[in-house]
Amino acid sequence: MEPSSACALVDSFGRRVSYLRLSVTDRCDLRCVYCMSERMTFMPRKDILSLDELARVAHAFIRVGVRKIRITGGEPLVRKDVIELFRDLSACLQDGRLQELTLTTNGTRLARYARDLALAGVRRVNISLDTLDPHRFAALTRGGSLATVLEGIDAAQDAGLAIKINTVALSGSTEEEIDDLIAFTHGRGMGLTLIETMPLGETGEDRLDQYLPLDRLRRQIEERWSLTDIGLRTGGGPARYARVAETGGTIGFITPMTHNFCENCNRVRVTAAGVLHTCLGQNDAADLKEAIRSSCDDGLLLETIAHALKHKPKGHDFVLDRASVPQIARHMSATGG
Ligand code: SAM
Ligand code: SF4
Image 1 (cartoon, rainbow, N blue to C red):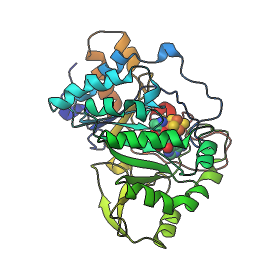
Image 2 (tube, helix red, strand yellow; image 1 turned 30 degrees about the vertical axis):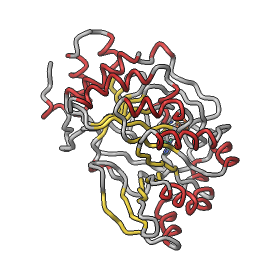
Image 3 (cartoon, rainbow, N blue to C red; image 1 turned 90 degrees about the vertical axis):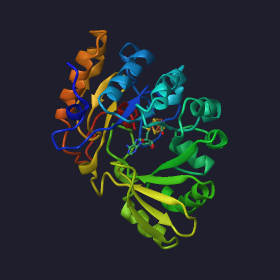
């Protein structure tokens, strides 16, 4: 079956899906306290899609109307030869089938890969950075080196990549460092996006203790900085942006916990094992690996995608409580952040 782009990627609530987050691995060289547990069980290697299979998934989504792809993980740059996937997809950028190819990274390997990414047509990267204090960085990532990430940021800027820094809002630490984070990011021409922690996967930490609602953080920011809302930007994206008068830079607020943004959702996620999740905060799943491995023809793959899209949930309903079992068992690192 060859679904037409008009029917395949519009869900039953009329939302057009044009954005794919494609995870290339669930593995990572860090262990952020809100994302993973210290000892993780990763997906069996036999379940992980090859780079050719990942490319096939990406091309199928492009065929039915996806125009923006973000490569993610786990840490996408720990995947061996991942640059080949970027090079493969860069052809779609050149002929206009794809409008944007980006990635989300923790930055540890950007010093090595930034130039290759830029050469493959990547223009923007999201880099996750929660603190500018080396000791706190080591604690939050359970052993990571802040200096390595800062070198990665330098390399990305040298390669001409635009950077948005993603910071997960954490009670205490982000409140203490928010002024430094604003000054650092805006001083270097980077955007800053703040994200509320979501109850995804067991981390061995108490999420209620970590959780910092962004309306509280925003009030603290406004005691010292002048913010003007510039509305919802980046078609269908979940962030609400404000401009900071003193710096001219922007702060994005992603509030899955305090303000659900699902009515504009334009995205789906595929894990490194080829599982399609049409909602980050629900347990819906469609197996694309089976569709890929059972046939060289893309018919079944396209049919599976179209069917899953018809059942895209209306939205998430995250609740944070002290329940011993997380609401969604899979980690953000497995779903693809
Ligand atoms: N390793 C890469 C990185 O850290 O940028 C890409 C994958 S990571 C899962 C993608 C994003 O998800 C990061 O910005 C991270 O901070 C965020 N994240 C991870 N777990 C989260 C959680 N439970 N709630 C909110 N954001 C989370
Ligand atoms: Fe790794 Fe990114 Fe998760 Fe941190 S947030 S553990 S860097 S996947």
